[in-house]
Image 1 (spheres, chains in turn brown, purple):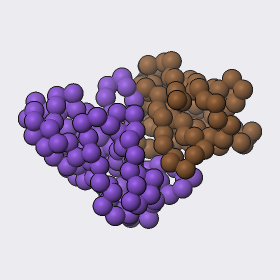
Image 2 (spheres, each protein chain N blue to C red; image 1 turned 90 degrees about the horizontal axis):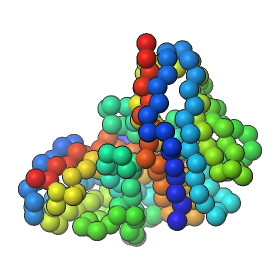
Image 3 (cartoon, chains in turn purple, yellow; image 1 turned 90 degrees about the vertical axis):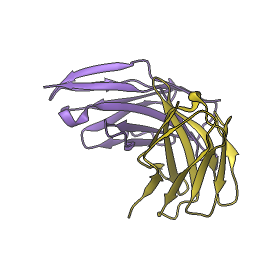
Length: 115
Length: 111
């Protein structure tokens, strides 16, 4: 079974600074997808960014980018120019290439942004 | 577009009571999912329905049943609630290889 590990239960960053959240995963599949979801205090799960394993280029979405290291099974999220609204719980998730599209989540990293 | 909707938003039950959590999506998605979120545990899959007419167990199915009523609706039933089922429950849906979209969650407390 696939596992997703987020080794940082909590992180903090100063407003306007850059922070990197770590995620590692374990799989024997070659075709899969990786996601970062954000969960603010409102509890809503919001997709931040996704990465297809077959793509070598790292995904970017505005201030959010990933460092995808397939051989190392590592998928970190970098948040640049951090804003107060970035404060949230961040979850890394894995989805295999099969047809059921199930997600396996890490336990999350709570990000605090200090003004 | 409402996306994924869940009812109720909050619920308090006594041990042994039953209830059904409702989920509906208006995005014409084939696959639907039920997750539970507990502190320090992330989200764990309870049941899923890869397509209309099919349901399968996820990681933590014990104590739950599901019904895929039609393509839009996927309900989760607790037949005899236990305090261990106190959690936040999320429904999600996806088309095929697309992203999963989540509902707003239901906070359930079992006393």
